[in-house]
Amino acid sequence: MLTLLREQADAARTRLDPAVHDYYASGSGAEVTAGEAQAAWSAYRLRPRVLHDVSTVDLSVQLPGARVESPFVVAPMAFHALAHPEGERATFAGTGAAGCLGVLSTRSSVAVEDVAAVATAPWWFQAYGMRDRSLTHALVRRAAAAGATAVVLTVDTPYVGRKGKVSGVRISVPDDQYLVNLAQHLVAGTDGRALAEQDPSMTPDVIAELTEVSGLPVLVKGVLRGDEARRCVDAGAAGVVVSNHGGRQLDRALPSALALPDVVAAVGDDVPVLVDGGIRTGLDALTALALGADAVLVGRPVLWALSAGGAEGVAACLDALHSDLAHVLAVAGAASLADLDASMAVSVTGR
Image (cartoon, rainbow, N blue to C red; front, side):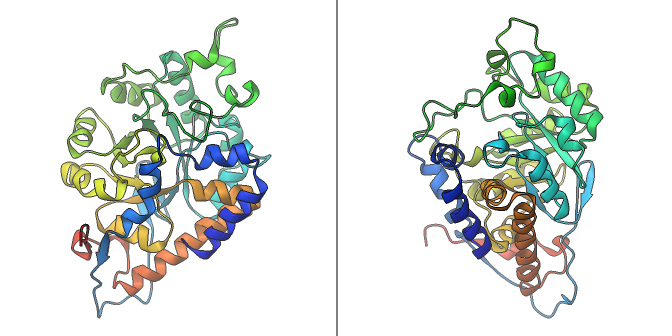
């Protein structure tokens, strides 16, 4: 982990209510998957090129609906107001200052339009297929109207994973935060929380459905298998995010670092592939990008940065990752992300 990220994580641990810190940090079950994420990137070794002009380095990347100056993307995470009074407003102000794309969670503690008002860089909206699908439709339409350039459909949560450090599956959040994006769409007297839970009967048909409703490209997040990634692409997905939900869903699920090559091989160049899970340094990101990822998502470090320093902390976190990647990319003999390929990363698992 980069020194700044470690310092921000330490500061967050002291500043956050212990229950909030545990909620953010927790994984499901015995936290095997959550604990393996960072180390899994170390299962690869790099083969650098030499005598290539790396006097300048370009980290820009074209993603669905946006070209951004950095391949670091802020992952969708719930309830940022638990970490900072400005919640997602501060997160997305910092994300934009760093020139990065952010993904706003359906379970944001700040209304979509209020976050969009402070966003200075492209952003995507994360959606769930809810039990009341009209709620999902209403949210993706609002996100599109507010300026989102893509929808990220999370598919690995038919039920929310049980977490040992949390009583049940999530921390108690007041209705004014939990339902901030949904309240205007609820019929009086209905149980908004129940209607907003994920629909466990969801099938790939939802990809085309949300594409039509939103008018935006739909990426699918939460895929760890090549065959499932191919199934999503064939159903209309504009991109795939290799993810085990930060180890918060199925414990003992494969680390994203080890699942990535299979997914890349299955979808080829048909759609962009992104990955999250344990990205803490430029070397982690370089490995993921060499293995075929088009961009990498960062989750918990952004929450720690938000808690430690608000918008400025978030920008500093992302800037540090960007700078570290630019450095190691040049040392590896690559002047841009297009110069990377799978020949540069070799698995040493089991060595």
